[in-house]
Length: 331
Image 1 (cartoon, rainbow, N blue to C red):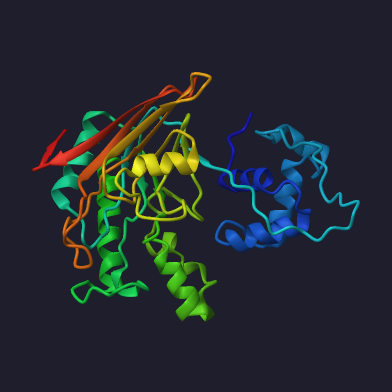
Image 2: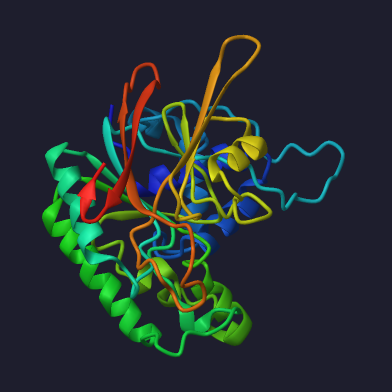
């Protein structure tokens, strides 16, 4: 059995997410979404046919994943137009030891707390680091009140690229995943509104501006959830409404009814309930790794922190430590 290529991973992911799209329509969508990975639409269409067993019997032996063989595509007995609805497939992390950091908000990062979190990750010998949103702040392109003290967007990109390069050097063999938060999404939203002429240029995509491909860092976009076994990871902005209130974990529980951890609220909290059938649902919100007194909200109830997850890959059960940082010490 061969090793699945990067192109193959993309094709299989889209086949799972869009099982009902006609082959050519799906090929055009994949090429539009990932033009850096394929030469043209025809190459994508060939890959779809290859992975669904329609590229010839001689090529069947090379398939790593044969679950899509003989998949019926292009069947449309009622003449329905292609749907624009997308299947919400989570990004899965199957690593045994994951460090979750969130809300660094460069250029307002809290350097000492970031160092403490990463040192903790080294001590635990993590095999995955998940940056769970709001790595960048993008204060100067926000639709909210601008921070006149903020560095330029160019400097912001430079500081984050430097951080990611250092992160990769310190964790050379560790899987690194960056899930976009609401602040990170500001960049492409700003491009769409202010510079639509270059919005489709892949060089301006956030992942390319940050050089994630060269650093072998995965990006999770479009508010897509992350799964670590039975634990769902959200940044927090995916859930409509409010600031999380007194207990962000309870507010998240009421919206998800699932075991979830979120960042976004810059506040450590927890909430646990047991269902009638004895299933325990536990929700956590974790602290941030940014400055505690921003111009727009100098008085707040935030705290510094991060999380660590150990996963039983076979069962999906997990052990979560939600850490606080108080006066440069981890609790």
